Length: 250
Ligand code: PEP
Image (cartoon, rainbow, N blue to C red; front, side):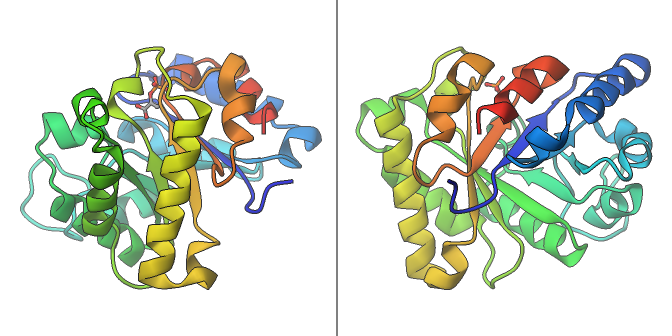
């Protein structure tokens, strides 16, 4: 049995259009049967233009809808940006912050990620804070240092809503995954770091997701790892049957 209720979160990234996306969401909702509900929570994070219709379509289904980033401010002169309040207004209940693609392509620092996580809490959303080392950092034996620094810098103070996703950069979209032992090491380390900072009562309730090339074929062994409380799924979340099969591996 799991110590925390597993969460399988799908990060659609910049994929999914109105018609095909609605079909995929419909298949996820239809497939989220009693057996799967007994195992895991589901969260679908589509591109922002789909949030409102997805949230409306998922009412009563048990499938939650989330966003992929948010701006730190609540409103203002920030052309093109979307605030956490707007995401909540559209029906999101969670938001991914600090995904490695945003850290690298958009130059988001730990402080930026933390500000976004704080904005999420302010708006009543659960932030899913992403951390993870590069291949070079792992090869240099620095994975725990890097993850520890990102956690310290990206997770807000206070015992608010929080989910953390460990996503080794080199495992995202590559078909590569760390060994189960390496995942276990990083997740145990993250839990220990959160305990030091927040105490056990809080840290033991935080869900720690693994992300990076999770597929139906490897989900069960990854989800069985102590301190792995679910998955953040990119590519495989675009195919409803695969997303559901990953949840079935919990
Ligand atoms: C991600 O980008 O969050 C991710 C885990 O991608 P993938 O599953 O495609 O590796």
